[in-house]
Image 1 (cartoon, one colour):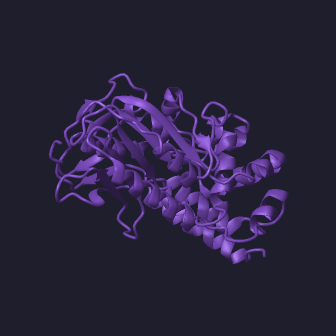
Image 2 (cartoon, helix red, strand yellow; image 1 turned 180 degrees about the horizontal axis):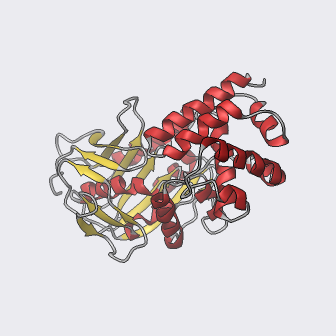
Image 3 (cartoon, helix red, strand yellow; image 1 turned 90 degrees about the horizontal axis):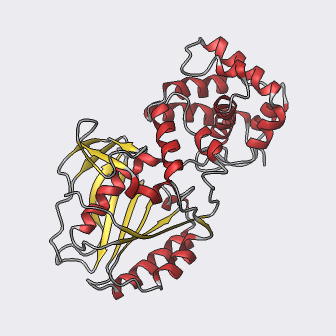
Length: 357
C-alpha cells in the first residue's frame, strides 16, 4: 500500500526536527524544504512521494535515503551545482531548493539506484562512551579482551582501542594512541572510570547488512550530515584504521556460536550501540538467553561483559548499561553506567568503580 503523500511530507518534517536536535541546522532546514516544495515532476520525486509502507525512521527512512543520495553527489564531486549550494556555502532557501531540483534531474539514474539502499552509518563518536564502559569492566577483570559487536555496520567501532579519547572534553587528558586519526572528546559530567589499556586479542562483529569500509566508504560518509565536518573526519579516520569487516548474519545465532568458544585468560566484551531496537523479538530473546547461559559459566579466569548503549524511552539520550559475569556482590544484573547522547556528543557518567576481583 502506498503511503499517503501527507505521511511522506510529515516524515520529512519530523526528520528535520530530529536533525536540528542532533546538531544539524542544515538538515533541519533542508528536510522541511523538501516537505513543502517537492512536486512529482521527475522519476526521483515520484518514487519518493509514492513510496509504499512506513516511510519514517522506524521503517524505510525515505527522507534520509534521499538526503544521503544527494550528499553523495557532493562528496564525490559529481554535481558542481549542488556543491555550490551545500555547506560550507551559505545560500537562501530558494537557491538551495533550486540546486536540489536541478541535481535530481541531472542525476536521475544514480539517485534512483541510491534510493534502493537504506541509510547506514557507523557513528564513531559512540565509542566515547563504549571505551569508558570497557574501562569499567577491566577494573574488575584486567585481562586482554575479546571484542564482539552486534549490529556492527561497517565495523568501525571494532577498532575503538585504536581511538584517542579526551575525557572531559577537548582539554581533557588523552587516553589511547595520541596520533590516532580518531580523536574523541565528548562533553563529560560525573566521575571518570580509571582509564586502562584495552589490549585486544580478538575482534569480530556481525550485521544483517555489513558494509566493507573500503568498498562502501562513500555510502558511509554520504549518510552523515553535510554541516557536520567533524563526524565526516572521524568516520574517514576510522575507515583508515579498520581491519575487521563484520560477518553477515543474524546477531543471535552468531553470538550463540561465538560464546560457545572458551576464551580463558580474556575478558569477552559483547557490545552494541543503537542496534538492539532493530533486532526482531526472537533475536533479542535468543541473544539474551545466550548471554545468560554464557554468564552462568563465566569464571574470574574467563569473565564476560555485556555493554549496551540503547534507547530506553527517555528522551534525554540513550542508556549505557553493563552487566559482568561473575559479578561482585551487590552488582548482579545490569548496571546503569551513564546517559549518552545518541551521537556520542556528551556523556553523563553515573557509575562507581567495580571492586577488583
